[in-house]
Amino acid sequence: MKKFMIDEDVRQINVFDERWYEVITKDETFYFPSVTTYLEAFPKGPGYLDWVKNVGRNADEMMTEAGKKGSECHNLIETVLKGGQVVWQEGITQIEVWEKFLYWCSWFKEFTAENEVVWDAGHVEQIVFSIEHRCAGTIDWAPMVNGKREIFDWKTSKAVYEAYELQISAYAVLYSKQFEEEVNKGHILLLGSSLNKKGWRLSSYSKKDLEHGFEDFHHTQCVWHRVNKNAQPKFKQYPMEVDLKFIQENEIITLKGA
Image (cartoon, rainbow, N blue to C red):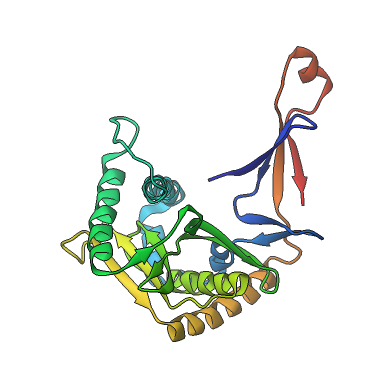
């Protein structure tokens, strides 16, 4: 999802690079790569490489489409967790996305029946960052479960890949650093899993698992920085008001670096 800010003073829309986060403190503005951007340096594995070879030119298109479906499913879950209602609409929400959302509903019903779970809207799609570790990310859900903080990441892929374990580990450390609160467990919920007749599979990670996972994430960060020396985000500036005179006298879309 694109991150944007409307600057009313100069009547423009600033659209930020979705692979980076803008972190504004009282003293300074930082631009950090997202956790998932760093994980691009993590080996994809032989299964992924074989898939790309078999799919061919359509691989990028299929990955983009899968990403869109995953985002749609996340949006449905976010709306419900924040107290809203979602409605399936033919031609708007794909039935495959709706089905995975309903798998999440089934898991949520079972999980909350078995545990005392407390959260508010701020713990849904919660942005976390660390100036020390130079990265940021968005945790899908960070409730208190039986009195202890736990974090969750929803996945709509075909399997739980190793990079996902590093991702949830990084989120746990960022959360702990930012809020000075220990994360007791991390969870990855795979929706649409063919390995479970319920349609979902939950993989859980202890504090020790998360610590070890973050060590590997840190090494992956180092590789990313080695390959992407002096990397900087780019963002676009769009005008908010356009007429023929504006078109003739101004640059329409401005691409800027941080």
